[in-house]
Image: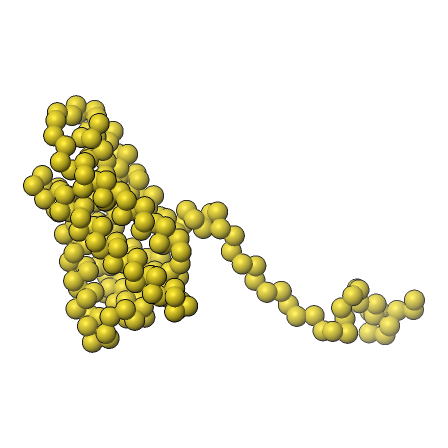
Length: 201
């Protein structure tokens, strides 16, 4: 059982961090937007933002690689949990300051950081910690079991990648403000005729 959980969680965390890395480096514009969002959070000194952004990008890219190699699987999960914990701390600070900063976790989305991102990161941290425990499991797993666990983990990872889109389905967007109505015209329909003169009552 632990062997299947190990495979599923490695695939889940691996897909999430692969998507995070690709979303940031797929174009210069995507990378600039990520750096700009990090600067807007104001959790690191401005002069250190480019270096911290590069370090985050390298660490995210290292997670899937570490998860692939048996001796470093547990390290991959621990690194993932530490990164997610750091991201969550930055989100908490941003929310406490009532700042509106776009989430560039996966490069594309421009949704502002909010409590739902803390929920997402909390779930991923839990998955990474459970994965770190399951990474020590040894035993033979049938090919069919490997395939099912891998697919389940990859699908779970994709759901986390699209977390903003999924939660948007259940959270109603605020209604746009309607046109302003002059005070003198409130309370009933317009009673003017075609020529502009008041219609007899």
